[in-house]
Length: 368
Image 1 (cartoon, one colour):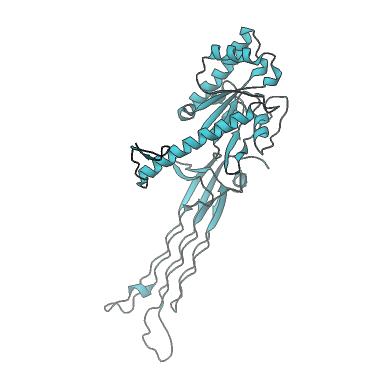
Image 2 (cartoon, rainbow, N blue to C red; image 1 turned 90 degrees about the vertical axis):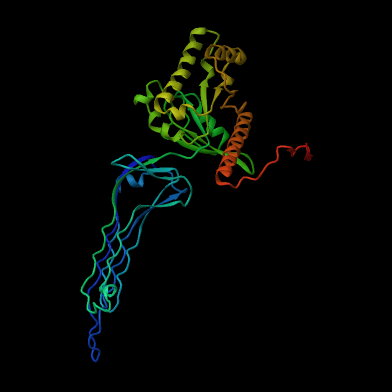
Protein backbone atom coordinates (compact mmCIF):
# COMPACT_ATOMS: atom_id res chain seq x y z
CA UNK A 1 0.00 0.00 0.00
CA UNK A 2 1.28 3.45 -0.88
CA UNK A 3 2.20 5.49 2.18
CA UNK A 4 0.41 8.85 2.29
CA UNK A 5 0.79 11.17 5.26
CA UNK A 6 -0.92 14.33 3.94
CA UNK A 7 -4.31 14.96 2.38
CA UNK A 8 -6.78 17.80 1.94
CA UNK A 9 -10.50 17.10 2.15
CA UNK A 10 -13.79 18.98 2.14
CA UNK A 11 -16.53 18.02 4.60
CA UNK A 12 -20.13 19.16 4.24
CA UNK A 13 -22.64 18.36 6.96
CA UNK A 14 -26.32 17.87 6.18
CA UNK A 15 -28.97 20.57 6.43
CA UNK A 16 -31.69 20.20 9.05
CA UNK A 17 -35.19 19.43 7.81
CA UNK A 18 -37.85 22.15 7.81
CA UNK A 19 -40.65 22.21 10.34
CA UNK A 20 -44.22 21.66 9.19
CA UNK A 21 -47.25 23.97 9.45
CA UNK A 22 -50.33 21.73 9.30
CA UNK A 23 -53.62 21.27 11.13
CA UNK A 24 -55.53 18.24 12.27
CA UNK A 25 -58.41 17.50 9.92
CA UNK A 26 -60.69 14.62 10.97
CA UNK A 27 -64.42 13.98 10.79
CA UNK A 28 -66.33 15.05 13.90
CA UNK A 29 -63.25 16.88 15.23
CA UNK A 30 -63.65 20.51 14.23
CA UNK A 31 -60.81 22.88 14.84
CA UNK A 32 -58.38 20.05 15.53
CA UNK A 33 -55.53 22.46 16.04
CA UNK A 34 -51.90 22.50 14.84
CA UNK A 35 -50.09 19.18 14.36
CA UNK A 36 -47.00 20.04 12.31
CA UNK A 37 -43.88 18.12 13.40
CA UNK A 38 -40.26 19.21 13.60
CA UNK A 39 -37.66 18.59 10.92
CA UNK A 40 -34.92 16.02 11.43
CA UNK A 41 -31.29 16.81 12.23
CA UNK A 42 -28.82 16.86 9.36
CA UNK A 43 -26.02 14.31 9.35
CA UNK A 44 -22.63 15.26 10.83
CA UNK A 45 -19.14 14.33 9.61
CA UNK A 46 -17.31 12.43 12.36
CA UNK A 47 -13.66 11.32 12.48
CA UNK A 48 -12.58 8.31 14.55
CA UNK A 49 -8.98 7.31 15.25
CA UNK A 50 -8.29 3.69 14.30
CA UNK A 51 -5.01 1.97 15.21
CA UNK A 52 -5.58 -0.57 12.41
CA UNK A 53 -5.04 2.14 9.77
CA UNK A 54 -1.54 3.48 9.13
CA UNK A 55 -1.90 5.80 6.13
CA UNK A 56 -4.13 8.56 4.76
CA UNK A 57 -4.26 7.04 1.28
CA UNK A 58 -8.07 6.69 1.50
CA UNK A 59 -8.35 10.48 1.51
CA UNK A 60 -5.92 11.17 -1.33
CA UNK A 61 -8.66 10.58 -3.92
CA UNK A 62 -11.90 10.67 -1.88
CA UNK A 63 -11.66 14.36 -1.09
CA UNK A 64 -15.30 15.36 -0.67
CA UNK A 65 -17.48 13.92 2.07
CA UNK A 66 -21.13 14.99 2.23
CA UNK A 67 -23.74 13.99 4.81
CA UNK A 68 -27.44 13.70 4.00
CA UNK A 69 -30.05 16.28 4.96
CA UNK A 70 -32.64 15.67 7.65
CA UNK A 71 -36.23 14.94 6.62
CA UNK A 72 -38.88 17.64 6.76
CA UNK A 73 -41.56 17.47 9.42
CA UNK A 74 -45.08 16.35 8.49
CA UNK A 75 -48.62 16.64 9.77
CA UNK A 76 -50.20 14.35 12.39
CA UNK A 77 -47.35 15.20 14.78
CA UNK A 78 -44.82 13.38 12.57
CA UNK A 79 -41.24 14.46 13.12
CA UNK A 80 -38.74 14.15 10.28
CA UNK A 81 -36.04 11.48 10.60
CA UNK A 82 -32.52 12.58 11.39
CA UNK A 83 -29.80 11.72 8.86
CA UNK A 84 -27.05 9.25 9.66
CA UNK A 85 -23.59 10.62 10.43
CA UNK A 86 -20.74 10.01 8.00
CA UNK A 87 -17.87 8.33 9.84
CA UNK A 88 -14.29 8.81 8.60
CA UNK A 89 -11.72 6.43 10.09
CA UNK A 90 -8.21 7.87 10.30
CA UNK A 91 -4.85 6.64 11.61
CA UNK A 92 -3.96 7.31 15.22
CA UNK A 93 -1.65 10.33 15.18
CA UNK A 94 -3.59 12.32 12.57
CA UNK A 95 -3.58 16.08 13.14
CA UNK A 96 -6.50 17.95 11.55
CA UNK A 97 -5.95 21.56 10.43
CA UNK A 98 -8.31 24.18 9.06
CA UNK A 99 -7.05 24.50 5.48
CA UNK A 100 -7.96 28.21 5.35
CA UNK A 101 -6.40 29.44 8.59
CA UNK A 102 -3.90 26.59 9.24
CA UNK A 103 -5.26 26.36 12.79
CA UNK A 104 -5.01 22.99 14.54
CA UNK A 105 -8.56 21.78 15.18
CA UNK A 106 -8.07 18.23 16.46
CA UNK A 107 -5.27 15.82 17.31
CA UNK A 108 -6.29 12.15 17.14
CA UNK A 109 -3.68 10.72 19.49
CA UNK A 110 -5.56 7.75 20.99
CA UNK A 111 -7.45 4.75 19.62
CA UNK A 112 -11.23 5.22 19.21
CA UNK A 113 -11.00 8.96 19.86
CA UNK A 114 -13.96 10.61 18.14
CA UNK A 115 -14.35 14.23 17.00
CA UNK A 116 -16.99 16.07 14.97
CA UNK A 117 -15.45 17.66 11.89
CA UNK A 118 -18.66 19.31 10.67
CA UNK A 119 -21.83 19.58 12.75
CA UNK A 120 -25.14 18.79 11.08
CA UNK A 121 -27.80 21.47 11.07
CA UNK A 122 -30.63 21.43 13.61
CA UNK A 123 -34.11 20.66 12.33
CA UNK A 124 -36.75 23.39 12.10
CA UNK A 125 -39.68 23.61 14.52
CA UNK A 126 -43.22 22.73 13.51
CA UNK A 127 -46.26 24.85 14.30
CA UNK A 128 -47.22 22.67 17.29
CA UNK A 129 -44.61 24.61 19.24
CA UNK A 130 -46.21 27.98 18.52
CA UNK A 131 -49.75 27.34 19.81
CA UNK A 132 -50.95 29.31 22.81
CA UNK A 133 -54.13 30.57 24.39
CA UNK A 134 -54.05 33.62 22.14
CA UNK A 135 -52.70 31.89 19.04
CA UNK A 136 -54.76 28.75 18.59
CA UNK A 137 -54.11 28.36 14.85
CA UNK A 138 -50.45 29.24 14.39
CA UNK A 139 -49.06 29.12 10.91
CA UNK A 140 -45.48 29.77 11.99
CA UNK A 141 -42.73 27.25 11.50
CA UNK A 142 -38.97 27.48 11.14
CA UNK A 143 -36.60 26.23 8.49
CA UNK A 144 -33.79 23.83 9.27
CA UNK A 145 -30.31 25.23 9.78
CA UNK A 146 -27.53 24.70 7.29
CA UNK A 147 -24.81 22.19 8.19
CA UNK A 148 -21.19 23.23 8.67
CA UNK A 149 -18.82 23.15 5.72
CA UNK A 150 -15.03 23.07 6.01
CA UNK A 151 -11.87 22.45 4.05
CA UNK A 152 -9.46 20.46 6.18
CA UNK A 153 -5.83 19.46 5.89
CA UNK A 154 -4.92 16.09 7.36
CA UNK A 155 -1.35 15.45 8.51
CA UNK A 156 -0.19 12.16 9.94
CA UNK A 157 2.43 12.21 12.70
CA UNK A 158 3.22 8.67 13.75
CA UNK A 159 3.20 7.84 17.45
CA UNK A 160 6.63 6.58 18.47
CA UNK A 161 8.80 6.81 21.58
CA UNK A 162 12.17 6.73 19.77
CA UNK A 163 13.11 8.19 16.39
CA UNK A 164 16.09 7.23 14.21
CA UNK A 165 18.17 9.93 12.52
CA UNK A 166 21.10 9.60 10.19
CA UNK A 167 22.55 9.98 6.73
CA UNK A 168 21.41 7.54 4.03
CA UNK A 169 22.98 4.09 4.55
CA UNK A 170 23.82 4.78 8.21
CA UNK A 171 22.15 1.49 9.15
CA UNK A 172 18.80 2.72 10.49
CA UNK A 173 16.71 0.09 8.70
CA UNK A 174 19.08 -2.68 9.74
CA UNK A 175 18.88 -1.54 13.37
CA UNK A 176 15.07 -1.38 13.49
CA UNK A 177 14.83 -4.82 11.87
CA UNK A 178 17.27 -6.24 14.44
CA UNK A 179 15.64 -4.88 17.60
CA UNK A 180 11.94 -4.93 16.63
CA UNK A 181 9.32 -6.75 14.60
CA UNK A 182 9.60 -4.31 11.67
CA UNK A 183 10.92 -5.66 8.37
CA UNK A 184 11.87 -2.65 6.22
CA UNK A 185 13.74 -2.90 2.95
CA UNK A 186 17.51 -3.16 3.51
CA UNK A 187 20.00 -2.68 0.65
CA UNK A 188 23.52 -1.38 0.00
CA UNK A 189 22.47 1.83 -1.74
CA UNK A 190 21.16 5.17 -0.39
CA UNK A 191 17.47 5.97 0.13
CA UNK A 192 16.24 2.40 0.41
CA UNK A 193 13.74 3.72 2.98
CA UNK A 194 11.06 5.70 1.14
CA UNK A 195 8.48 6.02 3.93
CA UNK A 196 8.46 5.80 7.74
CA UNK A 197 8.62 2.38 9.37
CA UNK A 198 7.40 1.59 12.88
CA UNK A 199 8.63 -1.26 15.05
CA UNK A 200 7.72 -2.43 18.55
CA UNK A 201 10.73 -3.21 20.76
CA UNK A 202 9.86 -5.56 23.62
CA UNK A 203 12.35 -5.63 26.50
CA UNK A 204 10.20 -7.81 28.77
CA UNK A 205 6.68 -9.29 28.70
CA UNK A 206 5.30 -6.09 30.25
CA UNK A 207 7.68 -3.42 28.91
CA UNK A 208 8.03 -2.17 25.34
CA UNK A 209 8.41 0.95 23.24
CA UNK A 210 7.93 2.00 19.61
CA UNK A 211 10.74 3.02 17.24
CA UNK A 212 10.24 5.10 14.08
CA UNK A 213 12.63 5.00 11.11
CA UNK A 214 12.41 7.75 8.49
CA UNK A 215 14.32 8.20 5.19
CA UNK A 216 17.89 9.40 5.59
CA UNK A 217 18.59 13.12 5.88
CA UNK A 218 21.10 15.02 3.79
CA UNK A 219 22.39 18.56 4.00
CA UNK A 220 19.74 20.97 2.78
CA UNK A 221 16.84 18.74 3.85
CA UNK A 222 15.04 21.63 5.58
CA UNK A 223 14.98 23.42 2.21
CA UNK A 224 13.62 20.37 0.41
CA UNK A 225 16.68 18.31 -0.56
CA UNK A 226 16.27 14.53 -0.42
CA UNK A 227 13.32 12.72 1.11
CA UNK A 228 13.87 13.04 4.87
CA UNK A 229 12.37 16.52 5.23
CA UNK A 230 9.02 15.17 4.09
CA UNK A 231 8.90 12.89 7.12
CA UNK A 232 10.59 14.92 9.87
CA UNK A 233 7.13 15.63 11.29
CA UNK A 234 6.93 11.97 12.30
CA UNK A 235 9.68 12.56 14.86
CA UNK A 236 7.81 15.39 16.60
CA UNK A 237 6.04 13.06 19.06
CA UNK A 238 9.11 11.03 20.01
CA UNK A 239 10.78 11.31 23.41
CA UNK A 240 14.33 10.37 22.35
CA UNK A 241 16.19 10.70 19.04
CA UNK A 242 18.92 8.20 18.10
CA UNK A 243 21.49 9.77 15.78
CA UNK A 244 23.21 6.96 13.87
CA UNK A 245 26.70 7.53 12.44
CA UNK A 246 28.39 5.05 10.10
CA UNK A 247 31.62 4.18 11.91
CA UNK A 248 32.91 1.86 9.17
CA UNK A 249 34.24 4.74 7.11
CA UNK A 250 36.26 6.13 10.00
CA UNK A 251 40.00 5.51 9.96
CA UNK A 252 42.76 7.26 11.88
CA UNK A 253 42.89 9.57 8.85
CA UNK A 254 41.80 12.89 10.33
CA UNK A 255 40.31 14.19 7.07
CA UNK A 256 37.76 11.38 6.99
CA UNK A 257 36.87 11.90 10.63
CA UNK A 258 36.31 15.57 9.97
CA UNK A 259 33.98 14.65 7.11
CA UNK A 260 31.95 12.34 9.37
CA UNK A 261 31.70 15.00 12.07
CA UNK A 262 30.59 17.49 9.45
CA UNK A 263 27.82 15.09 8.36
CA UNK A 264 26.62 14.72 11.95
CA UNK A 265 26.62 18.47 12.53
CA UNK A 266 24.84 19.04 9.21
CA UNK A 267 21.94 16.87 10.32
CA UNK A 268 21.80 18.72 13.64
CA UNK A 269 21.60 21.95 11.68
CA UNK A 270 18.74 20.61 9.56
CA UNK A 271 16.82 19.70 12.70
CA UNK A 272 17.27 23.18 14.13
CA UNK A 273 16.14 24.80 10.87
CA UNK A 274 13.09 22.58 10.61
CA UNK A 275 11.81 22.81 14.18
CA UNK A 276 13.47 24.22 17.30
CA UNK A 277 11.40 21.93 19.55
CA UNK A 278 12.53 18.87 17.59
CA UNK A 279 16.14 20.01 17.87
CA UNK A 280 15.75 20.40 21.66
CA UNK A 281 14.63 16.79 22.19
CA UNK A 282 17.03 14.42 24.00
CA UNK A 283 19.43 12.99 21.41
CA UNK A 284 21.72 9.99 21.77
CA UNK A 285 24.70 9.29 19.54
CA UNK A 286 24.93 5.73 18.15
CA UNK A 287 28.15 4.78 16.38
CA UNK A 288 27.23 1.92 14.06
CA UNK A 289 28.96 -0.81 11.99
CA UNK A 290 31.59 -1.77 14.56
CA UNK A 291 32.01 -5.11 12.78
CA UNK A 292 33.64 -3.31 9.83
CA UNK A 293 36.22 -1.35 11.87
CA UNK A 294 39.67 -2.70 12.72
CA UNK A 295 40.20 -0.52 15.79
CA UNK A 296 36.74 0.56 16.93
CA UNK A 297 37.88 2.16 20.18
CA UNK A 298 40.47 4.32 18.44
CA UNK A 299 37.92 5.49 15.87
CA UNK A 300 35.38 6.15 18.63
CA UNK A 301 37.77 8.28 20.66
CA UNK A 302 38.90 10.22 17.60
CA UNK A 303 35.31 10.94 16.58
CA UNK A 304 34.21 12.04 20.07
CA UNK A 305 37.29 14.22 20.54
CA UNK A 306 36.71 16.07 17.29
CA UNK A 307 32.92 16.35 17.59
CA UNK A 308 33.04 17.34 21.29
CA UNK A 309 29.88 15.31 21.85
CA UNK A 310 28.81 15.38 25.50
CA UNK A 311 25.59 13.36 25.41
CA UNK A 312 24.96 9.60 25.73
CA UNK A 313 27.01 7.42 23.34
CA UNK A 314 26.49 3.79 22.29
CA UNK A 315 28.71 1.76 19.98
CA UNK A 316 26.91 -1.04 18.16
CA UNK A 317 26.83 -3.28 15.13
CA UNK A 318 23.26 -3.39 13.87
CA UNK A 319 24.14 -6.23 11.50
CA UNK A 320 25.51 -8.62 14.14
CA UNK A 321 23.52 -7.26 17.08
CA UNK A 322 26.58 -6.35 19.17
CA UNK A 323 25.68 -3.61 21.66
CA UNK A 324 22.01 -3.45 20.62
CA UNK A 325 20.66 -5.17 23.76
CA UNK A 326 22.32 -2.69 26.09
CA UNK A 327 21.04 0.14 23.90
CA UNK A 328 17.40 -0.95 24.08
CA UNK A 329 17.56 -1.59 27.84
CA UNK A 330 19.02 1.89 28.41
CA UNK A 331 16.31 3.38 26.18
CA UNK A 332 13.57 1.54 28.07
CA UNK A 333 14.86 2.83 31.42
CA UNK A 334 15.07 6.40 30.12
CA UNK A 335 11.56 6.23 28.65
CA UNK A 336 10.13 4.79 31.87
CA UNK A 337 11.66 7.64 33.87
CA UNK A 338 10.35 10.21 31.41
CA UNK A 339 6.82 8.79 31.51
CA UNK A 340 6.87 8.62 35.32
CA UNK A 341 7.89 12.28 35.56
CA UNK A 342 5.15 13.30 33.12
CA UNK A 343 2.55 11.26 34.99
CA UNK A 344 3.60 12.79 38.30
CA UNK A 345 3.32 16.29 36.82
CA UNK A 346 -0.12 15.47 35.42
CA UNK A 347 -1.30 14.11 38.78
CA UNK A 348 -0.15 17.29 40.50
CA UNK A 349 -1.96 19.40 37.91
CA UNK A 350 -5.14 17.33 38.30
CA UNK A 351 -4.89 17.44 42.09
CA UNK A 352 -4.77 13.64 42.39
CA UNK A 353 -1.13 13.32 43.49
CA UNK A 354 -0.69 11.63 46.85
CA UNK A 355 0.98 13.52 49.67
CA UNK A 356 4.58 12.52 50.21
CA UNK A 357 6.22 13.11 53.60
CA UNK A 358 9.83 14.14 52.89
CA UNK A 359 10.91 12.46 56.15
CA UNK A 360 9.77 9.08 54.85
CA UNK A 361 12.22 7.01 52.80
CA UNK A 362 10.48 3.97 51.28
CA UNK A 363 13.84 2.22 50.91
CA UNK A 364 14.43 2.40 54.67
CA UNK A 365 10.95 1.29 55.65
CA UNK A 366 10.38 3.90 58.35
CA UNK A 367 10.62 7.53 59.33
CA UNK A 368 13.91 9.33 59.01
